[in-house]
Image (cartoon, rainbow, N blue to C red; front, side, top):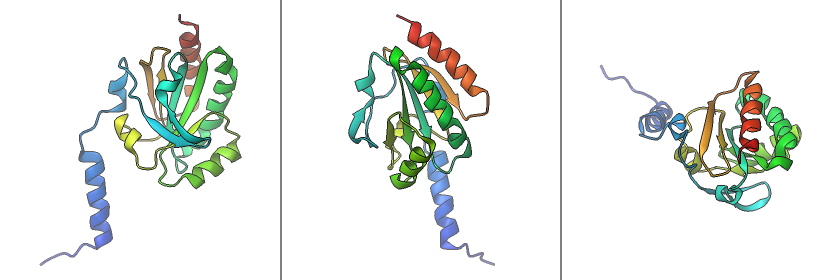
Length: 171
């Protein structure tokens, strides 16, 4: 007896196998290494390169509009950005949705002022080993990944604040 599996199920299985079986660097293994450089277009238009922010402390946050914890975390990241931007700190949001219009609307609805970039082809997500949402990297002024946070739960922002404070006061 042969079981026929609909094409849509076969495609979904093939995509899942490719996503989960393709060797890639896990996000957590980047801690203590140089943050991989990249350039992406964003809300402000032209491409932004991560290396343009060398000399600043950077919070690099990968997020998606369909991610509930991302939506919950975004206003808190905005608050941290506002509090420390004058101390040489910035948040850069990297949206991984396939289409940027939803991300633009969500950012506007949430009042996000920090730079938002669009990783529509997932190339930067792969470079950083992103497997779930959200993932946040804290990068020091020399471009080294100092902290990696996978996921978000209420209270994580206290850890973010402590780590940002430490990094912006380092020489």
